[in-house]
Image (cartoon, rainbow, N blue to C red; front, top):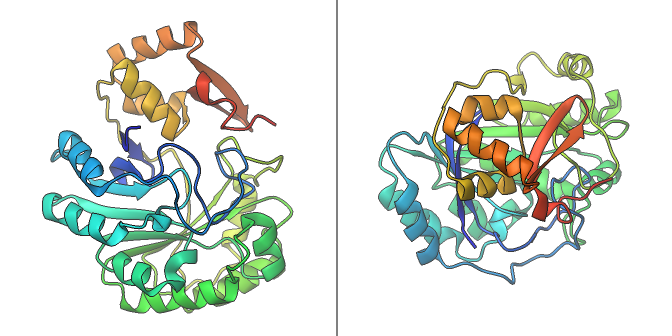
Amino acid sequence: MKTIFGPINSRRFGSSLGIDLSPALKQCNFDCLYCELAPAPTVDAQKSIVTVEQIINELKEHLDDKIDVITITANGEPTLYPHLDELIDEINKIKNNTQTLILTNSAMLVDESVFNSLLKLDQVKLSLDAISDEIFKKIDRPHKDIKVDEVVKKVQEFSKVFKGKLFIEILFVHGLNDTKEEIAKLNNALLGIKASRIDLGTIDRPPAYNVCGISYKELHEAALLFSRDLPIHIASRIHAEPNHANYSEQEILNTLDKRPLTMDDIDILFDEQSKDRLDILIKEQKVIKKIVGNLEFLLPFVNVKRKRVN
């Protein structure tokens, strides 16, 4: 399985070349309600492991000076990857001026080796959806050994020593963490975190379970409940710069596999030839459309079973 995907014009991080540390299957210590992948039992370690050599060889083939950020992610939780420290060291040897970024659910910061490995990155995005133990367990459905109070403490500690850009992401699920009480608890925890930006978002991709997000109006109202001292940002997809790159048929399928895209995304990312290839894939039913809220997403037909349909 390929570990590299993209580049994708990220709404928040620029031109992003992704590294999937679990390309074959979902391996995660959370089973979040809003996950793009189908529900799966949580794990505390990876069993299907790609080598650092394979990742670096593939990265060298795709990395160029047009890439803003190398994004470490996974079908699951990237910090479960057992060779993460070695991988970051090898990436740092070849990245030149490109930034490094990891997207993590924060839980493995309680592991000292993971904590120290992430300090070597240029940018880190930590998720923090809830502070209340009950709400945390309902939304993120964590592995049995994960305690939210311990995670919050480590996020706060990490923010004090990390020299790069730290981003916090809160994803709101309707009826769970969008209450004034939970937002007040989030606010108090965030006041102890030194972050470059705190992104407030909601469900805008096909979720694992039958849950829904909140409206932009509700996001705005939630933002007003946080302290004015916090760098709150309402995440939006409308501020992406055009890329208009050329994608082969396989690259289109690989990219849609890692991240379902809307036609607005396609208009930003693809040149006209790539759009023609996509049209053919749609006609051949190799790519299908799925409606979530007001957005229509494209994803490969072969992954319909993995990306659960409610």
